[in-house]
Length: 504
Image (cartoon, rainbow, N blue to C red; front, side, top):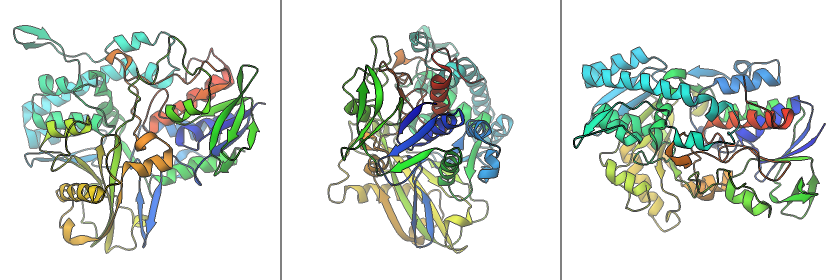
């Protein structure tokens, strides 16, 4: 039985902790804040409750597997997991609206036929077939296996089977997600639908490889789910599963240094000067913090490094929490994406080289959940937009002015929004910085194949024996399912050793 110190109580770290405890190890989680869950936080005020992190769960099988492997009670006995239908409603720049059924390719195509026409719907259906092929080719190495030592094969091989396209007397294949939209979908509304899945993680579709087609495919194939009471309930359930398996938690314990002895990780030292010994250290923190914690090399000569993986400061999420008077109208969609009329301006803004667009793309979450509102005559709504890293949010009026633009855009999704607002709370990316420790509250993106390896994430194993990486800043990247899978990979590597080849 090994003593294992886990740094951070994010979802990936807790997933690893629960699995390691079941394997017989003595596990203690050290969290610098006063609670668990990483980005899965909750704000409560005046009877209203709001999720401030991910508001929906794709690929719930990852957490079903976690609960299956760590106890008798399945996930559905620990949380009230419900499928969201429609999975999303979209308001495009030209005013066109479409609701997409959950986990139904035929239903999605039918909905697109009614709104965008037969040809557009056929092109989207054909795209989903190609996206499935990309998923089948990349799913195991990118989600279910430790990062290959010869990861450059993933970096160089594009799994998306782009169709030939004649351009300027040459036949070319789409190499980026933007080219897939322009050359294969050939409709600005379909392109906006496609690109919104990358934008949600702060990825620029003009630069992200075509393999990012797996992001919309995951949603269409496996559905989108919500946890009654708010997504924070998923974090609560995972935390309780950890406690039931004997995992210890120490909150308010900020790790300052990883102790190294005899050439391997041997414990953690905290900001107050105290320390705790360990045989293994699992770090669920971003690479900037991890580098400050140890003077040891964290990357071998052939490893994916943060620079190569595009893991500099990442775009963050700007969120406005809205307490509304008046009940939610019948049939209102849970999630609406209101697309910007200024795509180029928005992408330049996210790249850090322009002013924000007059109306950014926003995601509006309106759960039909009595637990989130004081009564049926009120509604809680979360509106968010992705913004570039840094930003002058602390300057007088900057955050409030951008919040005005975000709320104005959200008015396309919520009838009479302006008149219904009782109060609002503005959360800049720096709130995420405080809660998760990520620089500027950056959003970790999922690992993607191709792109020269710039969209892969560093391996879970480090060159320092006994030190492992877990969570969204390591393989297989960000997002709730990816975080849960990183916990499974790290636990497998520790329990079974370097010959571990991934989940079955």
